[in-house]
Amino acid sequence: DTAVSQTPKYLVTQMGNDKSIKCEQNLGHDTMYWYKQDSKKFLKIMFSYNNKELIINETVPNRFSPKSPDKAHLNLHINSLELGDSAVYFCASSQDRGRGFTDTQYFGPGTRLTVL
Amino acid sequence: GNSVTQMEGPVTLSEEAFLTINCTYTATGYPSLFWYVQYPGEGLQLLLKATKADDKGSNKGFEATYRKETTSFHLEKGSVQVSDSAVYFCALRQKTSYDKVIFGPGTSLSVIP
Image (tube, rainbow over all chains, first blue to last red; front, side):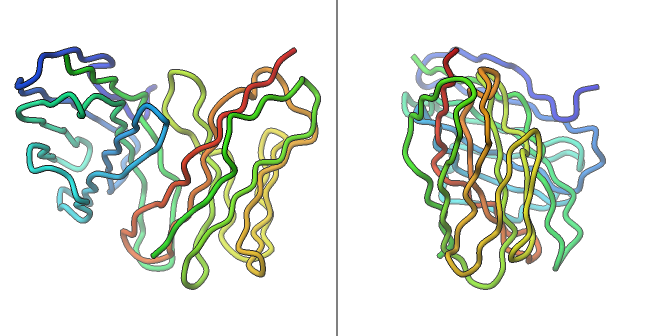
């Protein structure tokens, strides 16, 4: 069974379009994340949600909007796509039990976004 | 602020060679430290972790020891295989609620037969 799944795996689109990436985890975790990985493999956190509440919101253009309908899902919607948005986007989840406890992050397989 | 520095790659080794990938960090207090591995075309997965000073994390023949005095968490393996070819990320996380994980830039390893 897939722990963290993302759809689609590949996304090719034109500049200016709006697109969404979906993420689901079946691990029962409370916290989910979106990361962007550039062509040099550098990984940058974008957002984090805990029980549907936004808890980390890095400096990301407001064209990017996360949505968490329930704690098992965290979707990423991107408006007015730009060339610089081309990257691999990873969803992840973890079970955070509060102060004094840190846990492993489980990553999805990634969505490779190409903006033409 | 918190940060993680890794040795730059790419690193190319012959099969059965000894591997060291250096990792140093800057953080207040005692963060948890991690090594994640990313195989080609896949997401990251945890390789090993250590949560306090002098702890040694180990998995699949890889080891790393949490050194508070040198703020380091170097990854080692005594004999690499072709299947170890991947990108390796050192990371840290403070032991407070909802703190983000800070990843290093990644080190690409290629093992040739």
